[in-house]
Length: 415
Image (cartoon, rainbow, N blue to C red):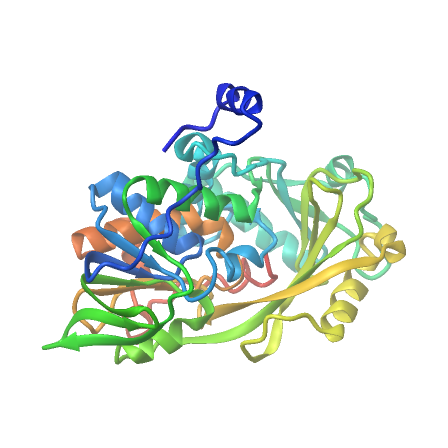
């Protein structure tokens, strides 16, 4: 596959852009693969990519029931940060953030990573103490964050009202190397790299059953026929429980809709990401000028992927006091994604009761930021059969053993 470069653009301009290849192949399924990955979103594609890059395993099929990146990867708000409290969380998210910094070069595809900085507002004294604790923990973990003053908050984001009558800004947890990336480009870049290594990306191919024999996985049945495999990875976000049921085991997760919206495009007015857990909302500005706005998950289990008036009213009512200017904006569009949540709000990267079957799920509201690190850890688990350092603490057995990785505060707002 040809490399993208400035010279390639110039060459194709002279040819009236007639020579561009498809970004990835659209093959017919083979009868058997070494590894099948169910789920063609960011996490599934990253898993396949690092299996090929780090372990030389390329006889892989990535199976997607819809279109590539059409699930949560294409339905999120693209925030990237790693300032989590618990050591296992900070390690995997910092690995992911560091991989994002060079991802465009690694994939030869511009994922538009923008390290514009992420601040988490402290609007109560309880939050001040909590974020200061997180800043100290991050210092021990080698994650670059700091707690900043209200005046510094105002300097970084002048449109903020730091003197709100109900929720004044008392400071913020600031990660200067956090930021955003283009969600579609991340999926497309990984897909192109996987296809270039000879992997098969099978779109519009829904898994209908997981076949097993003597306690071991043997393959899957799909709408495009039966496919055998030696190892199976389940990476399907909000539908993890359904696919796990096909494989004969249950997961400690629940699925909920997570909604977000964007405003009409306006001139640049903020170049950082701001999260406000007290009022349960967050906002950033896209490259096109839209204000990207989101809040928390729906308060009930569901699989919907559309927006609701209730979410608009609740989220914007909360944010208007902190960002008065948004009261004058019109909404451009709204959407929802399906997230799976664990009891401790931390993911599962684990072996399963079915032999040679592995699962990656439970990222809740923070899945996009974890894509490279998640793929790295899941690839190591599938290749070796045992988790590496990044995934060691995220096994399914932690819920039975009571060793939770409690990130309910860090994941308390949709981000």
